Image (cartoon, rainbow, N blue to C red):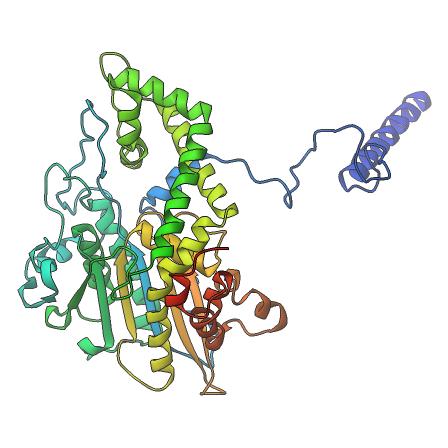
Length: 479
């Protein structure tokens, strides 16, 4: 018995010492390899955990695709409308991407994905107000719509979706967005009262049915009372919302350079090329024709709607094809952040829109009561450069029905002081912006002073171009 107890004691002691040794190594209190004077290990050992500071996380293309689809499932949590009790919300400006849509491109010689764009309240995904939305949209004769907007349908209605058409999922995504924002900005903060007027809104959309319909879906569940007579929808012909300030040669120059970077990365990717060759054989077309058809756009529709990828007599396009193409897309986004070409393009592309945003905030801070709620209904190519220009490099590529929100707040203790919050898909990204990172380190205020945003848009955006104005930056060639 004594021998057995001693044996168990020694066994427990050995296990304890082994555990302490491993723990010390894991906490880097004992180096696992001798370190040379130059700070480098002569041997490399695989770490138990990746170094979060230096090693990028592994890309999971399937997970990222699910995020991009943004399928309405559970209720979304958001940080919109959060502020100390003595702050007053005085205006909100929202930039959205349209909801889920049918592809813009088709893979040649394959059957188009069988997606029904009729709105059916009993089909998932649905929304409690979907049926009422359909009825209300059929009565929109009193609305004021700029130019060609008046001829666009107010909601999707084809049994087989047309190219680029908003789907029922896309409508539901924005009905949910509107409901969420209503609970915060209308019910809680009383931004608009029941007797709201048309002057309190500013609404603008591109000339695509998917952006108009997305805007109407959001407004239907957001407004205290959806009154067609108060809806004045402005048409924006430019996807970057540059309005009357679109003449910018250097913006086009940086965009062309960025497109060359994209092409260079694509031709270097041997895995991608093999996948394209294999898919082209399955479909029975030249590889270059398949590449030109932008297969990821079509494949994402199959994926988001849980429809089997297309097959031919030669074989089937499968998940492995999808993963490789999606992974390359994610790698391209990562390299785009590292290189500065897209950032330079983004600064010049988004200045007109950001300048409008700032000017409106300044007017409201001075006491104006018009345009307290603004909605821009746009595309991924609108949101993506805005995120880049603001310096929000950690943001994902805009998913379907993405929303970027600019809140303007008045300090109740110092009424002349105004602050902003910027939120992306419900997350507060104010202090990820290039113009407010340093302020966050020095202040306990939970927001960014309005003047920081004003100075960035009016002056600091042009410093990288060695310019003092948008006009000059648009025409100054790089050294």
